[in-house]
Structure formats: structure tokens, C-alpha cells
Image 1 (cartoon, rainbow, N blue to C red):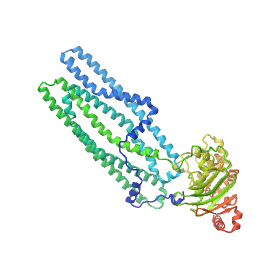
Image 2: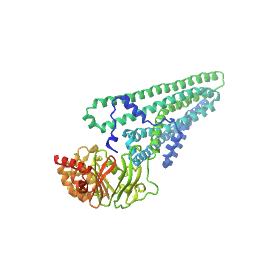
Image 3: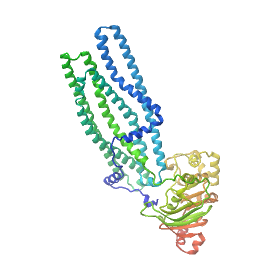
Image 4: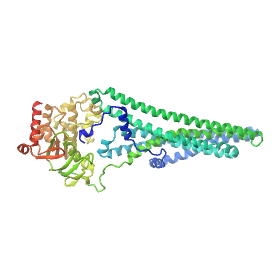
Length: 610
């Protein structure tokens, strides 16, 4: 994309920044979506054995909890009331065994829940990562880095908590409540009906706070996304920030975003702080009414005190899940919000994909042809207009022109980072749309003006396109480039660790590493986008001879401002406002005394000054 089009705006006020980030929010959806839950269960399918055992343990655990007080009531009504001491000892031993088994089930329920949750999120994060890398460049041009990071970290973590805790804990609590309800109804149906009489009150409370908490949790996640996006952008552009003394301004903007995030979190806390105590109050009121009516029945002789005792032991087992499910509901809303965002990304189809019948180019010759190609990063505003030229295999094509003339756009299309809006781009007479992208890009080498190094050693960065290459092969490439001594001069030589974005390595050394990386790939099509701009003149002299070896028998496209490269090119394409204004060899274009001549004189003057 043209550099001017890719500049990220610097906001001057918090309102402006918040307005722009709000415009990028996803549309709201229902907080609890059965479709999303089914999709999450789909990620459990490969682990069906673990899932099925877990569901079985959930059922057993749900029954065990109310079964303990129910059996205690049986002991009170039976051997204790009958004065049967041996029966008391025997049934107490059975009760202890039941408790021990309950702890055994609890251990495995918790362990399998944690394992299943981690497996699901492991696969989900892999899918997010793979899907992002399958997206064309336009997606990354229009999506902020922080949003992508948030999907694979914050949102995935919310889903993990939902799977591990919310889902199976809620199932246990729900099963416990149903089992307790059945046993309480068995002990005394009339008293149980009194207990559930206030059910509509619970429903009203949950319904009211569900909507409020859903909106509050969505606002929290959106504000967190704005914080991470701004943080990633600020750290990435810290040199620009310090260079223009914008530290205070950016700190003020970030402070405002953090304040917003805190305010949204406080809104969640306020709503949850009312919701949970209301549930607790409701439960205590149930106990009070049940105690009053149960005591009245005992006084009238309609109920045995030995029945009332286990009944009241089970009351907390009935109301406790209601409170716990209310607490889990908060986490469920957060998990649903995270799942909505993740699946919205996974459902987002790439702007274009290779067709099913795409051709696998096992060994390309390197013929590149543009036929009336027009293209715009914004389809309504083209930056290339009817570009036509042919590069024969093994030719070196130099692209020259003013900034913004379309040079980098041409190589972006050749690299298949984008597809033409109109016209045809042919590789070995095959339309680039019909070529399998990876088979083409595996046979390309790219060295950009803004070189990028990964965290790792210098050796690993050079071996990036061929990780199976051994050290001797890398040394051979560096000797061909005549730069081995420059990289071995690093503190640990080729084993020097490269910091984030190449920190600790000079610009010239970074560029040499990128040259070596591209040469090791042994590409059929080589692209150099002002690749020597970071190399000083003396270093460039050393690698010019090596570059002639690298360019030999390869189709090469070079965006350059150095005379040495332009002079030896087979063709020079002079770009002007997205069009090929002139085309020919260096000598032919000089003889024409046109735009190229004026550009060349400017290049010559710059070279003389250097």
C-alpha cells in the first residue's frame, strides 16, 4: 500500500480516539447464543472420550451432594430413632464411604474439566492464528494489531474460563438443584411447594440483570480492546512519539482510555454487587418461610422432626446452586462475548482465496506479464492505471519514479499480496489468480526497505525460508555476499540474539541478513524494494558483485535509487502517477531525454553528494 495511505492517524483528543475506535466495534449479539455454544461443543468432538467421562462425572457429582443429607436423614429416622447402635455404626461407615467416593468424583471432575478446557482453547487459538495468516494483506491494512492480539489472548482466555468453569460447574449446580428438589419433594411435597413459590421472584431478578450485565461486559471487552490496540500502536511507534515529543499527549490519551476501562469495570461491579446479594437475600427468605411453615407442621403433628432436619440440610443445596449459577452467569456473559468475537473473526471470509482448481507451480521460469492492470487499495480510487509490460525469465527490471507513483504496488501484485482490480497479471503465461499462492511465494525472494527480523539468533533469521539448511550452507551464502566478516563481528557472531524488531543490530546488518535470507531461499523471482537504502555506500560496493550473482538467471524486480542498479537493469520502468510513463534500457531512456533523464540526473546528483 502507498506509504501515505498506510499512515496511522495521530489523534489529538480522547473523544476523537474513542469515536474512531467505537466505529470499529462489532455489532451487538445476544449474550447467550445456542449456536455459539454448539460451536464450542464442536471443538470438544475430537476429545469425545474425555467429554463423555466428564459428563458422566457431572451427573454423579450432582446426585452425590444432596444424597449425603438425604442418607443422613435416613440414619436419623432409622437406627438412631430405633436405638440400634450397630445399625448406626454400619450406616455411618456407609456414609463415610459415600463421602470418600464423592471426593474422588470431585477430583476427577475438576481435573478432566481443566484438561478439556485447555485442549479446546489450544485448538481454538491454533485456528485463530492459522485463519489470520490466511487473510490477505488488506485485512491487516484495515484491522488494528491490538484487536488481533485481543482475540487470541483476552477473548480466548474468557472462553477457556467458560469451558472449564462455567459450563461444567453450572451443569453440576443445575443437576444438584434438580436432585435436591426431587428429594425435598419426596420428603414433604407441601413444604417444598412453599420453597419454590418465590421462583418468579428469582426469574424477575435474573431477567433484569441479564440485560444490564450483558451490555456491561460487552463494554468492558470493547474498552480493553481499545487499550491493547493503543498500547501496541504506541510501543510500535515509540521512536516517532519521542521524536516529535508526543509523550505527554499520548500518555493523556492512554490515561483516558484506562479511565474508560476502569469505569466500565466499575459498572460491572456495581451491577454484580446488587445482583448476587439479591439472590442471597431471596434464598434466606426462602429458608425463613420454610422454617416457619415446617415448624408449624411439626407442632400440628403433620411432619416428623427427623424428616424436617434433612429437609433443611438440603435447602442450601437447593438455593446454593441458584446463587452459584448467578455468579457463573457473569463469567458466561464474558465467555459469550469472547466467543462472539472469535467466531466473528473465524467466519470472516478472506477477500479472495485460491480457486479449488488453482495450479501448483512446481518450478516456474519467471516470465511476468502485466496486461492493462489497474488496482487500488480502495477499489474506488486506483493507484495503478492500465499498466502493461513484460519481464522475460532472467531479466532485471528496475522500477523508478517519484514517491507514490506505484512502484511498491507493482511488486505487491507480483508477490500476490493483492489481486488486480482489472486486467491480467501472468506468471509463465498463467493468470496469477489461477496459481496456488504458496507454490508461487515459495519460489520468491523478497527484501523490503523496512526489513523485518524475528526474535531469535541471526542464524535462525537467515534460515527462515529453509529451516533445514545447515550452518555451512548459511556460511556459503554469506561468503557469496561478501559480508560474512560483518556479521561475524557481532558479539556472538551468527549466534547473536536479535531483539524485538531487530534491536541490537544495525540497519545495515539487518539489511544484509535479509539479503542472505533471500539468497538462501534460491528464488526464481527476486524482489528488492529499495533494499540497499539502509546499506552505506562502502558496504554496497562490497555486495554489488554478490548481487550480480544473486540476480543471475532470476527474474528480478528492483525498486531502487542507486545508479549502479539502474544502469545494469535489462529494463527500466518509469512510473508516474500509477502509469508506466517510459520503458526501455538505461541508454534508450537517456537518449529519449524525457522523465527518466530528469530522474536520473537527480539520482546522479544524490550519488555525487554521497
